[in-house]
Length: 209
Image (cartoon, rainbow, N blue to C red; front, side, top):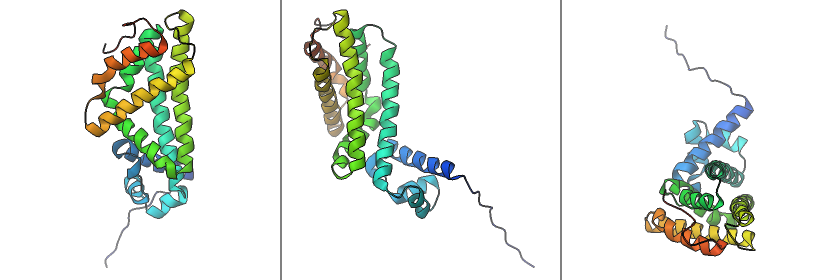
């Protein structure tokens, strides 16, 4: 008599399964960008059927927005820790420029660039993009405002200057991504431009250290 055996299936709690699916999607986006997030790709990475992914994530638009927000949230927290360890506002601004223009963050630049483009047709993602952009602006504004309080900076519009500086950094990062060059080569020039924007003494914002 012959017999067959099958590998027992493990039934996971809904919350655990949902977390696994989000983790799989996050890993794909981190490695290949937001555009790589498809139902099939997430299912394959999570090791489940596509129908199960659809059960836990009925809207791929919402999943893309969730993954985007999670990745950027992790990035912001990481940068906050790095610059928060620097006491002097001018040095803190330099540390911010160095960090954001580090080629090691290129995978997150891809996420940002694709997020901006895809947000035009994904309302949930558009909301997430705007929220994270405002969060970044608040971080940069706080550094500039601290510099103004200590007398290191003299701008009267720290909020607007923060947007300008972020626009400069984001633009250079996106351009370098398209050209296949290292954004860090522009860090010194960006620091000099930042000194003008915030009203700092020339050469007071250090980079490349």
